[in-house]
Length: 448
Image 1 (tube, rainbow, N blue to C red):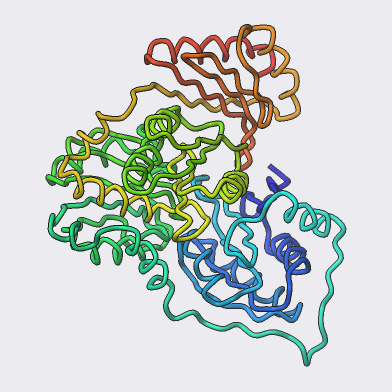
Image 2: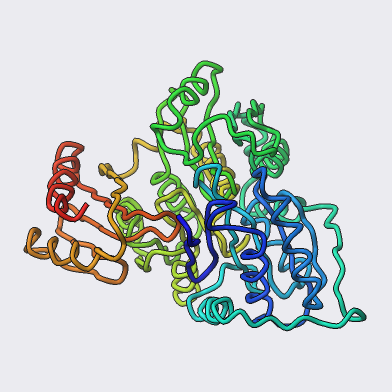
């Protein structure tokens, strides 16, 4: 992998290969050249290479005349809060999210405290490709300022969305696995404020990961057992930069990422009717919940910025993605694992139900996600194969291609974060879902 993966809102690459300090400086300086005057907030997710990259960004941005606010280790949604709190021109999160340890990346935030849209990100890419950077004279060089408190404002916003005293009265026992990443800081503080009996593992954000980074069932088998072994009411598993959340119930059952947005939507709509927005790769659970509550339901293109734009256009009360990312506009227009934790605890307290009971009430579907080592350049060929293979479906080609039937759907789309293509299917039975995925994979055998 010699080139970083660049999307409208940032980039990812392997440190020392496709992501080097000089490349990071050029990319962030291209971003800074599109911003108004004002400081730029820099945060990182705890990876071992994060401080090295942060130091490189400091030098580049100061050389362009920007002051930089060094917020050190903080979750991605916290960066969105900090950008607004400091009235900053923008922000950069140094993170590769769930990618393996050799990776790192840069996520770009505008002055509104949300990830860049396509129209905002395209000029950044163009300026990065051109290599033009406007350095300033010695008397205009910026300085690096420290952010002493990264968590209170974010915590205050999250706590204002739930009944804190009701949750405290339950004294929930919570297992939190931060996996040595940025969620350790606000996660501990938030759950303490909610009166939880907290068992916290991986609580030092030093990048010494104790297990694979994506919070999938396969990666968390032993951790799921710990939840039931200690008698916890719930287990929370954020990803490294704290914008996604997987959940485990009191019996040690992996509830998973898809249920995070569904659980939160069910709880929020019981109190605040309004539009719900998810992307085209998200389970039908949220759609069924919205229909039950008689509220508008919107599917956006894949990409957090697309979900946020649709939320703003539809005045949504909640949005998110099936990867465990929940977006609450009362907090910040960024996927937020801490919103997920607070809303799920609030639902358990409000209805006096176990997490397993809340989960079992939700519509039941079976979703399967696969990664295919398919060259992105071959995606158009794959789409044509699928069109011939799967007939009688309603097509959505806004992101890759999605085939919609009354009782199932199938999606093929290129990843924006890894050099792979994702295959996702959902039906009303695990056997049918598996069979649909197998059929799709076999149809692409000649291309892989």
